[in-house]
Image (cartoon, rainbow, N blue to C red):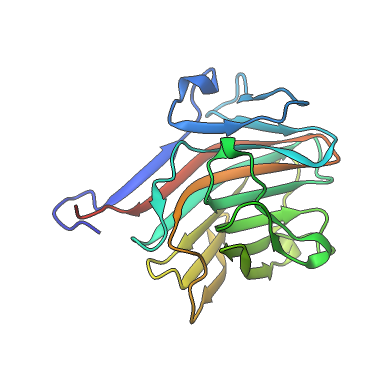
Length: 234
C-alpha cells in the first residue's frame, strides 16, 4: 500500500443514483433476454438496481460489476460488499456476491452448491458468498475457487438466511498473501479461514453480484456495490 498519501486505499462505490444504467459507463451489466430488464428501479429511495431472472433453469444470469478487472489478488488486501434485497419470490433463488475473474457482461456462472456439493462453474477464480436453492442445506455458503478447483466450501447457519423484501449485506475480505479470507453478513464476520496454501490464483478480479436463473422468476435488487484495495506504490 502506498504510504506517501492520505489516500492509501483505492475505493470504488456505486449507489445507482441515476435514471438509467447507461448513465454509468464504469458499471458493467448482463441481462437475461427473456426477462428483458436489468435496470435502475424507478422511484426507489437511495438508488437500487434490479437484476431479474426468468423461469428457464440454469440457462442465464443477470449481473452487475465494476467495468474492469482492476482488483489483482496478491497485490494487496482486498474487500468488497454489496447490499441486496430479494423481491418477488424467495423460492429457487441462486445468487453470488463476491469477487470474480470475469466482468458481468462475460455472462459466466460462478458457484453452485447442488446437493451440498460446491462447484466452481465457468469462472476459474472467485471468492464470496453463495445462495443456491439446489443445495440440500438451503443456507448461505462461503466459497472460493482457485484455477477451477474449490478451496472454500463452508455452509452457514440458517439464522443468516434471506427474508423476502428485507435488505441484507454480504461481503468478503482476501488478504494480500491470498491465504486468509473473511466473510461478512450484515456487517458481522460469519466465517474466517487461515490456509497454509493460497485460496485463489494471483489473477485480476472484480467485485460482482450475479443472479442466476433457476426455474423461478424473481428479482434480486442491489442497493450498492463497493470495493477497496491497497493503492499501488508505482
